Structures are given as C-alpha cells and as structure tokens.
Length: 182
Length: 136
Image (cartoon, rainbow over all chains, first blue to last red; front, side, top):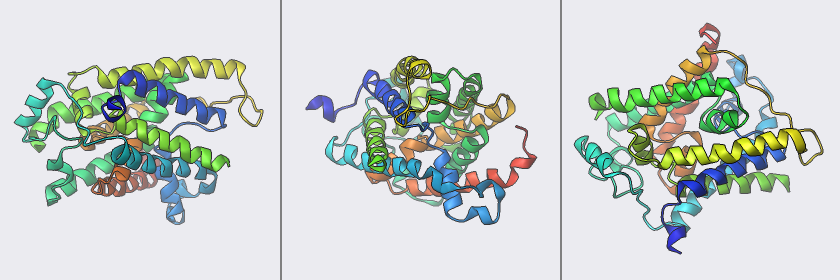
C-alpha cells in the first residue's frame, strides 16, 4: 500500500500519461488540455465580442468531460490515495527555497506561503501567472499536453520550438525573476 | 457510454498528475533548477511510449469508428511557438502547474487555484482579442 500512497515514480507516471493520450487518439480525439480554456471562454459567451471564440464549442464537449474527470481525479488522488503527500525534492532545492522564505519545502505538496496565504501580493501573482498560462498556451497553440507530449510524440518540430520556449520562460522566471518576487 | 470513457480517462489523468507530482509547485521549481531527474524522467518516459505508440497507430491502427488515425500536423512557423511558449513557461514556473494539473489541484481542494483559472481564461480572451496584431 505504501507504493500507492507515496510518490508515484516517473517511470509509472510518464508511461501512464502516454497511454491516456493513445486512448484519446483511439477514440478519434487528441490530447490537448489548454484548448479547454478557449472552449470555456466560448461557452461563457466570448464569441459575441470576439470572433476567435465564435465557433461550435459543443463539438469540444468531450474535452470538457475529460477536464471534469481531471478535477475528480485530483480529489480521488489527494483524499483516498495519499496521506499528506509531500514530494521528496532535492536537498539543494529545499535549501534554495528556504532562502526565498518557503519553509514548507520538502514538507508539503504545495507551498502554503503562496497558495494558502491570500494577501494582495499572492492573489496578484496567481492571477498574473494564470494570465501568462492562458495567453501563452493559446498563442503557442498548446501546452505541455498538446506540445510536449502529443506534438513531440507525433515528431512535430513546431512542438519542439514550443517546448524550448516553455523552458526559456520557466528558467527566466525561476532564475531571473524569482529573486525579485520572493 | 463514450462520454463516461472521457470522464474516466480524465479521472486517471488527474490521479496520475497528482500522484506523480507533476501538479506540485515544488517539483516544477526543482525541474527548472535542474536538481532532480524526476520530471525529466516523467516527460522522457511519456515520450518513449508516446512516440512508439503514435507512430504505430498512424501506420497500422484505426480509431474506434473504423477511421484511419489522422493527427493534424502543427502549422509550421517559429514566432508563435517560441514567443507563446515563453509566456506559457513564465506562467508555468510561477504557478507551478500547467493546465491539466491546475484542475487536478482544484479537485484536491486547493481553492486558491480558482484565481489561476480566472487568470487563464482572461489570458486566453486577451489572446483572442489581440491575436491579429501578433506575429504568428
């Protein structure tokens, strides 16, 4: 049981995600999570003010069902398959994070300093981070699922460009901007 | 019936993302610090299975309705993938979760992630409005 309740190793997690992608392809669909944001914008009526959202979003309902399942999966994993799971991250990472004031590093799943202490700064950080995620994924035409997993599995070089972009952005945030933010 | 399959695949995805810690802010920070193999192994092993599976299916398999497997190739260009990718990477590292895990975290009871979701919808809308002025 310990193996279920603890961290699932990468060589279990990675192949399982690939199998989920292959199952979606078998069902005649494709694995791309961020397009749900566009679908949701359209379902919320954004098509009236912007033609990018004026499309038959109901054809994407299967992906919204997948999204609903993902929410349920997060509930099942955290409530029934885990007991305060805390990722065993590297010692050096813990030291670096403690330097930024994240005393929770190595002791919790997420830093409560950012997610459970909702002062104005944290609200703005989460909001701005979300805007970047939404804007960037649509501009790049996909996120980690659509490009890093699906696109690269289909040997698409544009997806490799996107993944290089993901890393430029991520490294910039963690190594250049974090010292100013935290 | 097929609707239920999509939900169940989503459930499996949410569980895997949470349990293998791709939904952990700490794991994403660790990945961008190059201090652990975990996330690279995760993506690498997904690609190992994914490349073989997709290449096989494109050549030999049909989908459940009997149609040939047809995966839309990505439009060829550089600016949209590079610039859009950089924006996404900035957001990914800041909130510590990409779109799928964001919703797995919502299910796990991290309700502040709703702020991220609102931001992402806003960002998607901004893209829709200004896309004609952006290089693609």
